[in-house]
Length: 126
Image 1 (cartoon, rainbow, N blue to C red):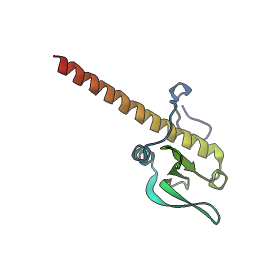
Image 2 (tube, rainbow, N blue to C red):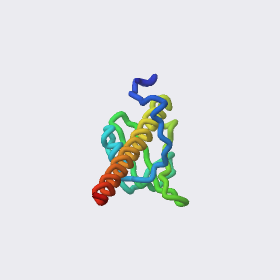
Image 3 (spheres, rainbow, N blue to C red):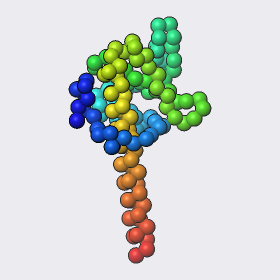
Image 4 (tube, rainbow, N blue to C red):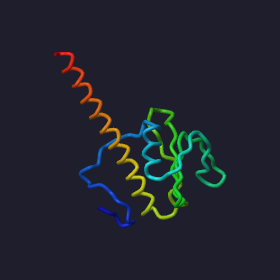
């Protein structure tokens, strides 16, 4: 299925609620999607305004995203100037895809971990 911007998307039934917390998982998803990933630096969000980031991803099409760890929780906060990035019609779907792939990666790891635990328990009973 493709959206209006021509970006392949998942069905609405595949939406998994998630909070981004794992920088390594996020970096892996971004790299797989063709982004160049940088760790720990300074991001110019608005002219003359800078913000520290924990992870920044830049695409060859000029799109970029940056995240920093929240001071109040373990969650990652998105730092972005959507208007300066160009069309929100392209930016929004790309961000949705990143979050969905992150959630899918997390869910698959949870299933594999659960299946492995069940195998270990079953083996120890024998």
